[in-house]
Image (cartoon, rainbow, N blue to C red):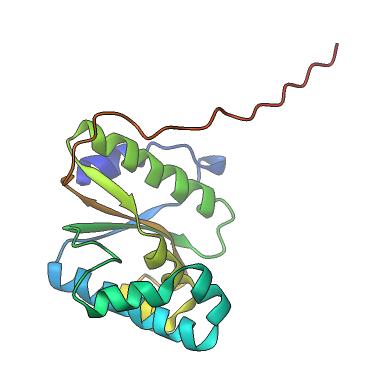
Length: 171
C-alpha cells in the first residue's frame, strides 16, 4: 500500500499543490465499524431524505447489512482514504486523480480495488462518520478505495460503449 500511495504522490495536481493526504485503515474491526457508521447514515437518509435514499437503494443495503452481508466495504482488508484541506480548490481533482492512479497501479501488483462511494458520501454529510474518520481539522475526505486481493479473475474487460467524440476543426 505504501508503494501504491508513493506512486500516486506523483499524480498530476493543480499548481503542483500535491494536496492529497492519505488515511489507510487496515484493521478489520475499524473497517466494520466504519461500514456500520455508513449504514447509520443510510438509516438517517431513509428517514430524512427518502427520495435520495430510494434512488440509491439504501433500504436494500440496510436489509442486506442486517442479514449479515457487508455491502458497504465488502469485507475489504484495507480502505484507502484520500483527504485534503476542505478549502483547497485543487483537492477534489487531485485526490480523484491520485485515487485513480492507485486503482490502475494496484492491478499490476496483483491487487484489486473498488471505489467506496457510499463511504465517501457519508463522510461528506454525516457528522458521526466525519468523527469516526478523525481527519485533521479542516480536512475532508475526497474519495476512498477498498483494497485487497481480488476474489475473481476476469477473462476480459466489461464491454464499453464507443466514446462520444466531438472534433473541432477551425478550417
